[in-house]
Every structure is written in structure tokens, then in C-alpha cells.
Image 1: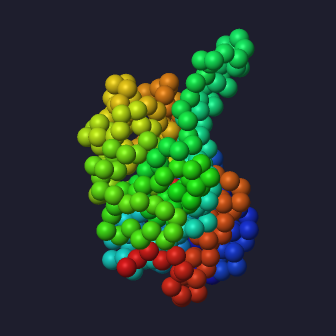
Image 2: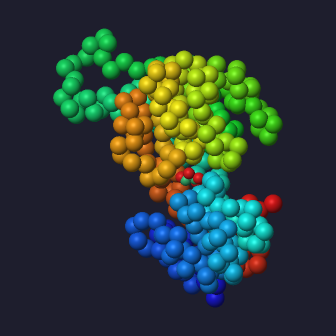
Image 3: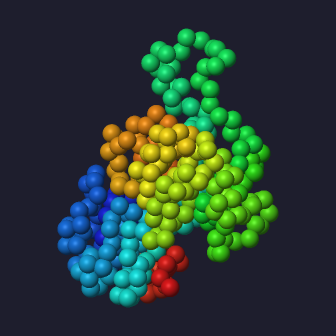
Length: 318
Ligand code: DGY
């Protein structure tokens, strides 16, 4: 029987799939497994089901001589050194598709809540600060008709763009050589300067790579249309957080909705979390019961395939 390490409690249905091919060693505590314990656990492991919070670097892989697969329960895999895994003939897999709609929904929840001040007006109401309807009460920004700018036209970026149709919003996307051509949902692709000058709302959906780390830097933020909004449901490190704070304080950026942070969990008194024009959530893009179960099952199935000597369906190695 194969030895399978799982670094967090996951849906029972996924554990069952794993138990059909091996013995599962499950980290059951309500916090991430420490790197030291993980290193100990992988010594005899054939498979590892990891979370995006587990750094899987070459040192860890070096201490796992039997490891055949790292199945990350996330679509993003910036926590894994895929090159090192490939060199060591270890398959790396992720969980695309199953979280696309949930993440696109959350992006829209944030967008709408941010522009219409849903959270701040709810708080004002609770604090007794509503003295009745007035013409200038709780004024937000119109969503309908605004230009939505998508950075990263992958599955999630496209699902976010599709939802814009109902709001009669023109959608533009930052052009990249790898972007697929417009397939009929009317996304206009353009180069950076024109994109930033035209987007009323910039929504980030790019993976975190050495090339995209801090892509939203001071220059980017000051090149955005004055008064534009920024939404990030991808990875925190896409944004230089100090630069965003400055742009918010100077009024260049009207507001930001952030589901992800460079260092997670972010401190509750982080200047962006407490900023009056920031709506912050704790990395909940894929956090629906249905999606998390599907992510766990997909990760488990990749392991089952690898244990059976097959190439796992969501294999990321070149
Ligand atoms: C992912 O899958 O990469 C998401 O960030 C998880 O919510």
C-alpha cells in the first residue's frame, strides 16, 4: 500500500478515494502543518496532497526519496518548485476548472460591494448612523456601463468577463501573446498603457510567477485611470502593497477589494485591511462547500492515477 500524506482535513469523499490506494497520514490540527513536521512525514511518502499554504521547495523534495506526486489542492501552484519536482521525476498537479465559477462569483461580490459601499453602509446602519433616507446618503459608484479591465484572461478571468454582460459593461483585457483570441464574448485586448487608461475597474486573475510578482507597482497604480478601482482575487504578491496604500491615500485609486495578501494570514491591523476604502476578505475565492469538495476530489484522483502508475490528468510538469 502506498503511503499518502495529506496536509489538512479534506472532504471525506476525497479521503475515501485515497484510502482505496494507500494508507493516509492526515494532519488533523486546525493550523497548517509546520515545515519541520512535513519534512519528517514525507520521508516515507509516495504521494503528498498539499495546500497552497505549504511551501514545497527542493529541500523538502530532497527529503522525500519515494515521492511520486505532489497534488496541490488549488489552481495556483506558486508554493511549489515545479522545476525541482520535474528534475526529481515527481509529478505536480493542481485543481483547475472546479473553482472557476466560485472565484468569479466572489470577484463580482467584491466588485459590487466595493463600488456600492455595501459593507460600510451595513456597518453604519448597525452603529445607529442612519437617520433616514436622504439624497446624498451612502453614495457609491454606478457599476452598470463601467469599463471592466481583466488582467489574466484564463478560465477565471473569462468567467468574470462573461458575468459583465448582464451589467452592460465593456470588457477590456491586458494583451499578452499567450491570450486566446476573442471567442465571441466581446473582450477587447489592448496594451498596458491604453488598458490602464481605460479601465474603471481592474480585476486581477493572473498566476503569480517571477514575472508577475509586484506587477501592480507604483507606476502601474499611477498610470491607472484616476479614480479607478482595483480587485484582487488571484494572489496577493501581484500587488506591491506599500504602493497600493500610497495610491489609495493620495486618492489615485478610489478603492480596492482584496481577497488575497502577500503574507497570509494578513494581520487584522494591516494598513490595507483597516483602510476605509478597502474591502478585505480572507482568501475565500474558492470557499464554497461544493467547490472545496470538488477540489479535494480532483487532487485525490490525481494521486490515485499516479499511484496506479498513470500520468495524472492535471499534470503540470512539462
Ligand atoms: C487557488 O486554488 O489557487 C485559490 O487561490 C484557492 O482559493
